[in-house]
Image (tube, rainbow, N blue to C red; front, side):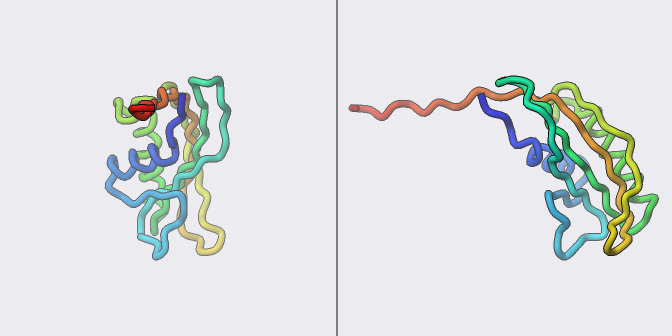
Amino acid sequence: MRFSDVEGDAIGFLVARFELPASLRVPSPRPPEFYRLYGTGGDTMNRALDAPQLTVDAWAEDDEVARRMADDARMAFLDRRGELPLWRRVEATSPYFAPDPETETPVYRFTVRARVRATRRQTTPAPAGG
């Protein structure tokens, strides 16, 4: 069994859904609107079920835009419509205002907790003639 790259899966999900940049780090140069998503813990339930926790930051030049982005992303994770097929139960906290301390750029933050099923490992066939 193998657990997927939940950060990568979630970043790809946000980019596909909203057509905005999303990454683990604050991009340089920083675009006017983007998502930052990173793992912040979680538990491994057993060999087949992981329970990661991800933090999602919605950055924008305006408070209202950042809040709307966070609300939209939160609802997208809760209503993932099969776009994250290995993700089972998903919970998300309410977004809260957490401006960047260095620049005072508006940021709304929330946490996603999910149950993610592992996939079976691909087996490599034995070399012929051995």
